[in-house]
Image (cartoon, rainbow, N blue to C red; front, side):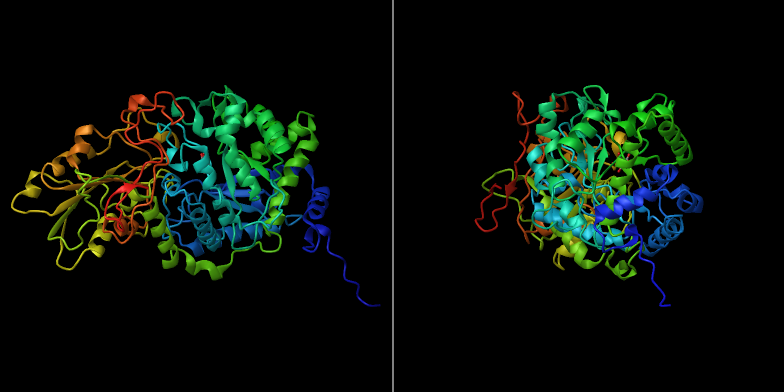
Length: 615
Ligand code: GLC
C-alpha cells in the first residue's frame, strides 16, 4: 500500500490563492482564537501563555522598550523568533506579526541609520528619495526580525503648535502626497494594475507599513495633540484624506486610527469614517489598528468602562486593538460582547479576515523567522550615505549674506580659525529628535552618528583651526579672531503631547547665544528643530546666514556637504515660517497670510551662477 501523503490544509498550502487560505483558516478558528488575533500586546507581556496558549495576533514595543539596554539587531531577532516559536506551537500555528515605530529609520535600534524626520524630508519634495529611505528602513527593520512598522505618518500638520509636527511631511496636502512613495519603499512596489486598497508586500526584505493616523490628526484646533479637528467632511477629504488614497494605490497593508476627534466625535468610535468611508467607499482591504490604548480613551477616566470601549471601537470597524497590556481583559470583554450579541460575528470575521490576509501576503506563514543574513546591513555605510544625501537635500537656506550681492555661502573650508558653538553643535540626540532610542528622545551620544561639529572638523582644511564652545561668552572672543562662527541652536527632543507648545522661542537661550556671537564675528545660524521657531528681526539682521536643518538624524555630514559648497541647497519650506507665535494658525490659503518666510521659500547659493536665487 503506497503511503499516501495527506494534502496540506489550504491555509498551509502556499500554492493556494490568499483569499482561499484566509477562508479556510477562518473556518477552523474558534471565537477565542479569533479574538486573540485581534489583540496587539506590548513585548513585556508577550510570554509563552500569550503567544502559544492564546495565540495573540501581534506584538509591539513602545518607544524605548527594547530586549535589553543597547540590544543589537541579533538580540532583537532572538526575541522576535522566540515569540514566533511560541506562536507557531499554538493549535493552528498562526504566526504573529511584530510591529515597531521605525519612523525615521529603525530608530529604536542602537546603531541603526537614523534618517531626517518627515518635516525635513518634506523640504525635499522628493518622492523617490522617500521610497529609497523606505527600502533601507525595511532592510534594517527586517534585519532585527521585525515584520511591521507604524509608518508613514501622513498627517497634514496645519498648526506647528502640535507636538507631532515633525512627523508630518508638511502643512500642504500635496507635499504629503509627494512623499507617500515611502510605502513602496517599505513594502515593495505593487505590479501595474494592483487593486487600490488591497494589501501588498513584495518579499521578506520588505515590511508591512501603516498609514497613520486616520484621519485629521494634523488639523486639530490649536494644534492640540489628540484634540478636535473642526471642519466639514469636504475639507477633511480635501486636506487630510487624500494621502491615504496614495497609500492605498501602493497597497499599504494597515491603517492606524487617530486619537483625535472630528467635530467632537472620537475617531476610535467613528463607524462612519472607519467603515462607511475607509473600508466601504475607499475600498481598504488591509487591517485597521487602534492607537496605543486608543480605545481606553473613549471613556474617562481612561478605560473606566472597558467593555463599552471594546464594543464601540470594534463595532466602528477597528480590526486590531493595540491593547497593549491587559489582553486577558480585552479577550474576556470581546468574547462576552460577541456572545451577548453586542458585536456581530460578521464584524469579528471581517476583522480576522483582514488580519490573516495581511499575514498571508506578508509571507509570515512561509517565512516566519528572521533572516540573519541581513544583520550586517544595520547602519552600514551605504545606508548612512543615503541618510547623508537626505540631510543635505532637506536643508533650507533662508538667508545668504547681509548684503544679497555678497552671498556668505559657501563657507571657506580653509579659513584661519572657525568657531563652532551652540547647544546643538555636538549632540546626536538633539539632531535626531524624538522617537530615537527612547520615545521622547534625549541629549547626548544616544546612538552612532556624526554631529555637526564632527562634520565640520572632517570637512575643513588641515590649516584651519576649529574651536568648539558649547556655551560661548565674551571671553571666547578675547585674544582670538575668528573668520566666522557656525552657531547651531534649536529644540530639545519631544514626542506627542510633550511637544505641544504655547510658545516657540529657541530653547536653551538660543537667541541669546546667537546675539552674543553675531555681535563679535560673522555668524551662520543652523536651526535644529521639528518646526519653525520665532526669529526676532534684529537677530536676523545681525547674522550673515540662516539655515533650517530640521531634525537631520545621525548623519551630520549632510549639513557640511552644503555649508562648504560640495553641494548646493535645494530644500524649500514644507511649512510656513511665521513671524510671531500669535499669528498661528496661519496657512497659505488663509486671508491674512503674512509669514517671515512663506511655504515653498528656499534660496540657492547658485554655485554655478555665483548669485543667490530662490530654488
Ligand atoms: C503612539 C503613537 C503612534 C504609535 C503608537 C505605538 O502613542 O500615537 O503613532 O505608532 O503609539 O507606539
